[in-house]
Length: 112
Length: 112
Image 1: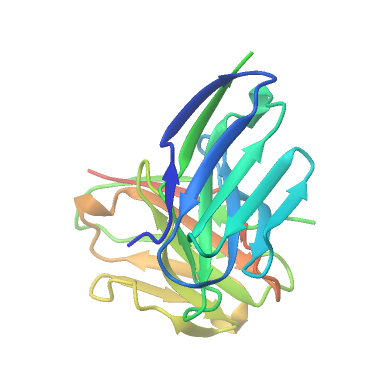
Image 2: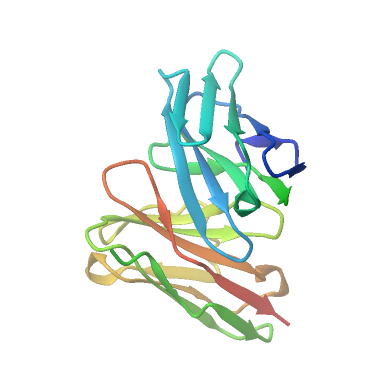
């Protein structure tokens, strides 16, 4: 079973535009993480936001967390063709420390 | 620093045959995970090790799947016998004290 659900399932944008994707989850969490997966490769950790944090930045990435709505968003600013990948949110639940539950992902295509 | 190493990268077998996957985590990482990823889905945890102890194997189909992590370093995941529905990508990940997980490139299994 998957805890998180990403929205949209797919996103197509042009270079320079911003990309926003959302994640909703069901149970209380310790933290929420975002990962990127390029085609045919393993996942790469992007950013972790703890349950007591509301916003976090890393380079061109901005993540928000709203625990009252059980949702998070990932914003990629000034997208590049190299940002083309699938993006997954993963939750670390309060009752299952260290066990990440992933959503189905958002497939992002950035065209030059 | 070397990342998580997995082998083989690809494996094609006929149903009812056995298959084994190998994982070498990042040096010093005590926690090792095996995930299964179906096409278009996020990874799902199969088993988690803390050193050589399996602390969460609730999602591992124990009738045909087995895993071991001798000496708390390398790990092997085995399927015997394989079924058509086992076709997927098998990912290995490792982590230290932080919640960030580092993933290997995965083994793509095709069962014919």
